[in-house]
Length: 85
Image (tube, rainbow, N blue to C red; front, side, top):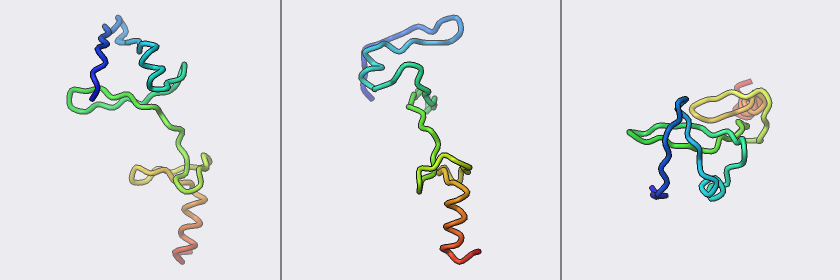
């Protein structure tokens, strides 16, 4: 973990502002969606990725399984390839 030396107070609504220098360094665009994780006593911000099929990149008709995103079309093709249908 890198200490940036930056400290911010929460406002009345529990918000903080990420300094422009930090947003530029991490390539965060204006209005970008961030995912929020916690680990022990840490809050972790990560760029949110648009869900897409891990095989084809398709963003249509998705299912999440075991932490991976797959489209129904890919599932169908895999089932055919495996001789299940």
